[in-house]
Each structure stands twice: as C-alpha cells, then as structure tokens.
Image (cartoon, rainbow, N blue to C red; front, side, top):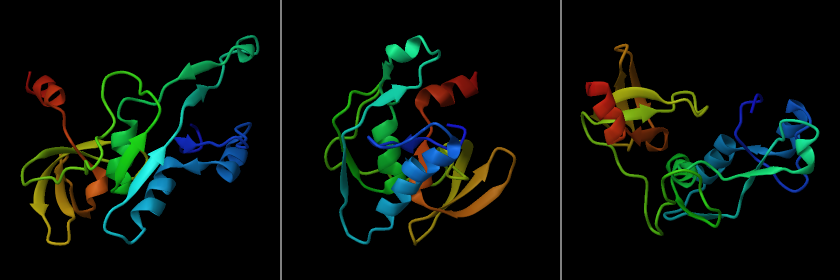
Amino acid sequence: HRSGGPYFCFSDTSAVSNSSLQRTGIKVSQFCKLIRDIKCREKTIILDCCHIERPPSKEAAKRPVVVYPPATFYSDIAYKAECRVLGSCKLGGEGRPPEFGEQPPKASLNQPVLVDRKEDGTYHKGVVSSCNEDGTYDVTFSDEDLQQSIPRYLLRPRSKEDLAAEAE
C-alpha cells in the first residue's frame, strides 16, 4: 500500500485514504515489533485472516476479488515477530505455513541471506560475516557495505533457486 503497508485491516478499518488506513489499521511491521518486544520464552500467534483486493473499477466493486495472502506470509511474520505462527487462511502460490513449534532458523557464517534493512518489506542480498553472541548478525552486502548487529527477524536465507539463477 502507498502508506507503507502491508497492513492488517479489521472490520472497521477504513482504507479510503492513507491517513484513515494509518489510523484504523496496523502495519504488519508494527504488529511484528509489538509481538517481538513481548518478553517471554515462547510466543505463538494465531492469524485468521484473508485479503480482499481493492476492485479495479466501480463495476467490479460489486464483485470483490478474494486474494489469498502471499505464500510466505506466515513465515515472514514468524521471522519478523520471532514467534510461531498458526494460520487458518489458505496461502497463495507455493509455500506452506510454518509447522507448530517451528522457529525462524538461525543464520550461519558465510550464509547468503536476504535482509530487510529498513523493515519495509524490501530485501537486500548479503552474506553473514559474523554471528554475534547477542544473537544478532553482521552482514556484508553486494556493494561491500557492512551492517552490524542485525536482529535475526530481519534475515531470511536465500533460496536455492535464487542462488542458482545468480550463478548462471
């Protein structure tokens, strides 16, 4: 969404403007931070959600189109919120929700990763250059920029397909 989404919207959320969406919904990244900041050993969230796409025209508004959350939706929330996620909604495309008890994996030294550097859902390619004692990581990016103390929830392992395509 233009207001820095994606957002969780509720039955009374108004998306008629960016400001009304910001007042009545909650950014997924903000929700994840709230969950991540809860101090406890184990966290599980249950998501019962679906997505209705804004219709492309007034005529289509009479027939809203149901769009399932992206295939990585539950795993993205699990990574960013550092918790388990149970979801009731079918996901789009390939993928699966994390299994009960599944935690975001830890990264290892020299592992190719994607990093959400600004917590805006935009991932940048990098390689883990250090695994710190506090559970954070130092990552070197393709432009040789080094970012230190990156929390685990901002990292995702790079897929085998991504690495294979890059090698070609």
